[in-house]
Length: 132
Length: 127
Image (cartoon, rainbow over all chains, first blue to last red; front, side, top):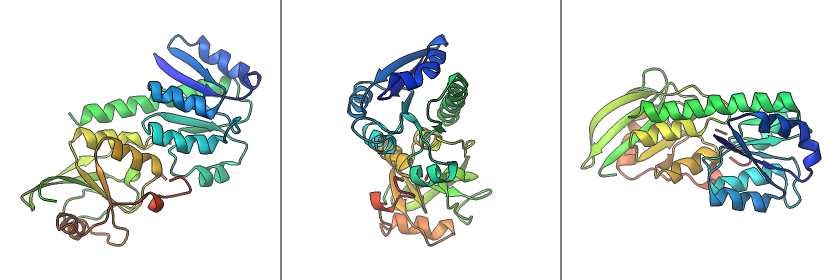
């Protein structure tokens, strides 16, 4: 089961995206409405992927991604951003983000995100196996 | 370092006389050097895995599984740095020398600095 945490201030912007995620039999979708609450949730137990909105009620998405590293750098993170790809890369460099999502992501974005996450988890598990 | 295993991100086939890779996530292989009583006892290489966006933890897990104690980088992002620290691998820094052997010798002699948070790539850190 993949545990995903969606950190958004306005759930309505994510209705299509979230609906597609919960349709998947192997996804457990959690919600947080602030960065601090999401960090507490990650502290309490690991999740496979955190998806952060561009602006949260208490911090912006990239600030959240940076703080997430201090809580658990093993947790994957994707961020919604209206920046163009180059600017996003420059601003997020080093944070190790899995992907950039467009504002108001939809069902197709959800499926693409899940495919990336599964590939990444497979690579991570292979690297652990290859070292044994 | 008196005892332990050092990893060096390396180009092509690696080895003690090989070339370092500037970007650890994209290196071809990791050269692994075993140190006993301050002497190099064994040298081996491990192929790197495919690098994908957000895949910083793939080499972290790979090297942790190979029981690496220290890695020397020329650059690293904040996320993999935090990952290495979490699994107990010390991250040392040398940005100037392209050849593996002198960097390893300096690490064994205690002459290499640990990387600081302010030396990571990018604003937050470049995996």
